[in-house]
Length: 284
Image 1 (cartoon, rainbow, N blue to C red):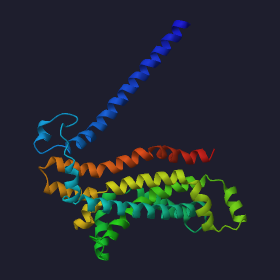
Image 2 (spheres, rainbow, N blue to C red):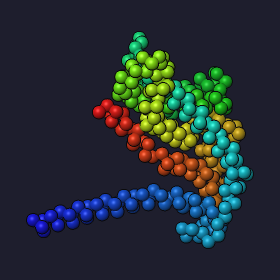
Image 3 (cartoon, rainbow, N blue to C red):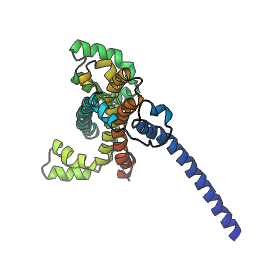
């Protein structure tokens, strides 16, 4: 019995060791390009091809300054920050109101509208670009900030409504009844009861849409031609066209574009799993 137990422990140890080894190799393969991008941003035009070290002997931090000022990444960064805040705020507000209405209110064709909304998630975003561009051109919104913001709000609403409605469906109605007895209106219940309890799901909505808006490129390429209105990914392609052979500056611009998203994801990743599972846990 002792030898058999020892054998199973050894077998389990070997399996865990191999699993961690494989996962570590996968993690390193994903992180290494990011590290190489950052290190290349600290080199010169000549050393970027000659110096293969993981950390250059001489670091040229001024590359980030030149990319931020002369490359226009300061303006691109502020544009992306503005678009992200406005779009995510609008998605959270509208989706939470709509999800609460679908979950708690009764109105004609409720199920039809909800199914229609969910069905829109199956339409690939680039597939609607022609109709979207024609519509925005007719409305005079091409190459405008509002013309770039509104489609992104529309793109983020279906998933956010679906996730929040699923969460609201599992909330105990006793809490709402108690709030109604205390004199809360429907809007007050949404604001003071439903939203605070839905914070895990709201965190998922905020994280996913923040990543979506910050990384958005195709819509910006279709709508925005003015450099002063471009977000970071679109500005990066313009910068690449001007500095195609200046790899350190190009890598510095890419680092400025990518690092904020990585930081947000690393800080908020635990909320993703927590928010996705929160709805199921609430119903237990």
